[in-house]
Length: 77
Length: 222
Image 1 (tube, rainbow over the protein chains, first blue to last red):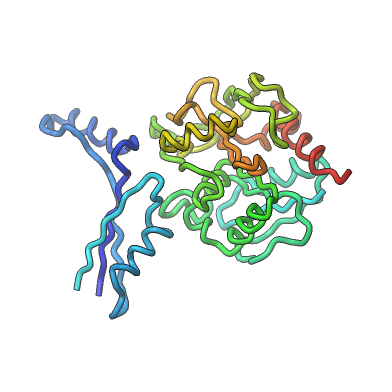
Image 2: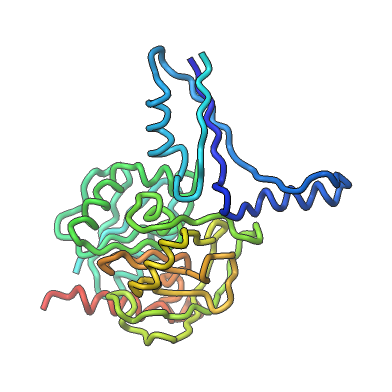
């Protein structure tokens, strides 16, 4: 089974990389973008029987720094 | 006086930090990231700058989970002294020994230059060789030195006089211009600038020497 973890900077934490992407898009003429936030996707291959609680534990302890980042988990069959 | 300096794969300021400790009179032991204990009788542990584990995932995140970091955390919980510089500061925040986190520089550029650093408090073993308000010249060399903490944490740092250094001119977007902070018991200092790179005439500046000398003075057995 697999899990996909999305890690994003929390709202209120400045994301300079997202801002740079937004500026670049604007400079290229994409004028419909009001904001960009950049994050990470982490795919986990899990042994059978692994649970979302296991992945949550991994997020809390390593995959995300909860001081600055939020995360969400998609369990994929 | 004994100091340990931790070496991770990718550390590159470990020897500089060791030399700065030695010049202040410490006996220095280098400890490898896979060691699960510090040598006996360490007065202070230095966590050096560099790119531990290639900065993978987040700067300092993998190092914070290494066996030696468990030993460093246990040492600080016992009231031991620790000093993290640059990547070492990032490691100390990732372990939770110090609050907050270091984000990508606001200007997205790696910055390597000597900056003016304002001493905010002289009330610590690290900073008592300076006067509060002094501005010293210390090099920075980082891509992720933008200090972030929530409002509540910043207020606590201010109220408890735990902001050790601020930038005279903020180079990286750090909240409240913060360059270095102390733990609640004032025995752990984490800072992005490199005092060990301003500790010898050959470095082009010696403003960092007072930090190591002050530590040596405090930690010398009476």
